[in-house]
Image (cartoon, rainbow, N blue to C red; front, side, top):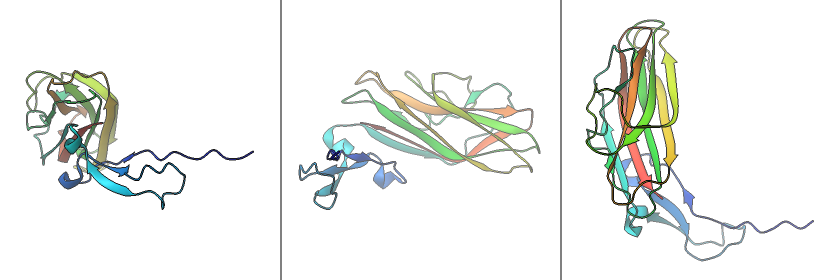
Length: 187
């Protein structure tokens, strides 16, 4: 049975720094064979095609002792994006999380919404996207990495959306996030 040729589609890759936010590889030769050496690959900036992109860093938002989720304030720090073409976004917030007390934990999750972005410590708001992540500190202030990701669709083109995370202290102690970076791009 002969194999069907593989069509090469643009490969979207995550931004690792602000210079790469919203860029992807595009086959500009029109070659659709399964041989990538024949293709003419180039890096294209999504914003040059009219797509929205944004990246924000908020090194260390204030932690919380609340056992009920509160907002991290990344949207208020400037992580706001306005879809311009498709209303489909890739959202990502990454960093480290810890708890000040041995055997206590922290849970974080990804949220987005419209209107005024919530401040750090505000009551949880917005729409939950993706899965929450929890870590337990085996020693006080032990840091664990996290990466919250989601693709959201059906957003209204031309409407600004804030992107943020919520956090809560599991069992007790002070839950905190460190080195937090948020990236959003439309595709």
